[in-house]
Length: 288
Image 1 (cartoon, rainbow, N blue to C red):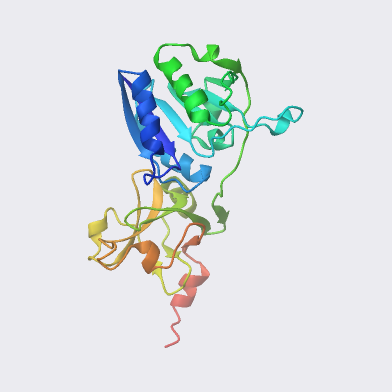
Image 2 (image 1 turned 90 degrees about the horizontal axis):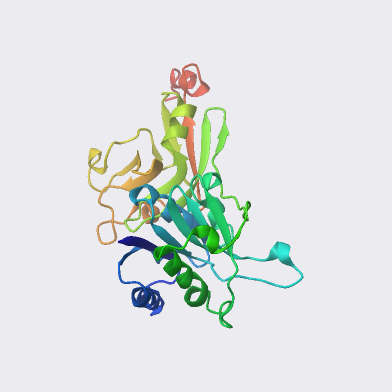
């Protein structure tokens, strides 16, 4: 049985996701469809990549991932350098299908792709109008039925590249950004545990948010290390810094995003205080 995952910005209010699943099940009898997310912000390929990257290691080789975010191809005669073609990429034994809009360049370790193919079957007159039905789903069907990826189109060596915001590193400082707020209101920043360890080198630190009245000075191992309703910081299962409120969901005081006034794109500062730093010297001479 082949696994097909779906990541889209279609939401679940309308019939579109059901239509995709119905078409797949009508064409393929021995598949399992898994929803990664359909709540990606419209056209937000960065958020789509965040969701997909966080689960890639959980899926076996042979899994087919449909990246249905900003997936409408744009092909104009006489202006090929700006065209946005549909692609299939094989990466670490898994397959990724979508549009060359930059999303592929945000996949973890995309430089190690074994094969990248530009799809070139636009025989249906509705192919560029309804690409999911006339390009992407037929391609998924061919892969499931055993067609070699190199027989799906023209093999290429480069893709469109885009860049997401990366943390800024200064002396004793990491300046990151909020990249996601989950269902529980937990705030995820683009600061990894690896970067934290390399930069901090075991020194004391303070995590600051938008307002200086909110700060955290230690990393918790789990949510229950602080009382219910208290803020904490930890590194989540995917290795990213997470700011949370223990059991702080809507109806129970609120999550970290709302309580701390944080949104996607806001700055998170981690200031380290090595021995001999100004902060430690000043602390020896209290003014009160």
